[in-house]
Length: 147
Image (cartoon, rainbow, N blue to C red):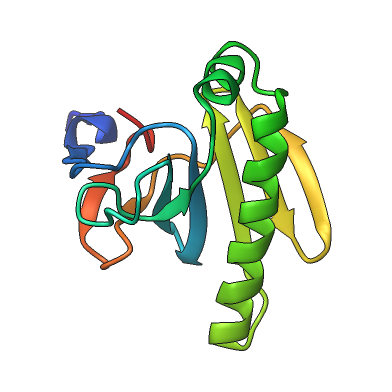
């Protein structure tokens, strides 16, 4: 009798279908279950246009602030984004009446995990699992959370 070894990776399933406004930096990731994540995009100066810019919106950002942030993630706009993330975390915890863990992802190697009252930097943002929109639509499975 001959044993055959099959590579299980051959059956690995990947899905990627990012709707408008998703998959671009910066964004928040909310862990919603085992290997389940919700992406909350962060947009600037959208004037409340949530149809084209879903997620969190930060208004009143100058072109200079945006340009500085694109060059260096430690620019002053970073602090405004961090404050928005703290506000979002607090809102989620108040609405759900339980603690949550979120992660601000600014680029493929820059992530800030918000857990309890601590913020921890990491070079490894969340990835893989099932990625959902805020309306719980599947937008990616087993891939990076950005386009």
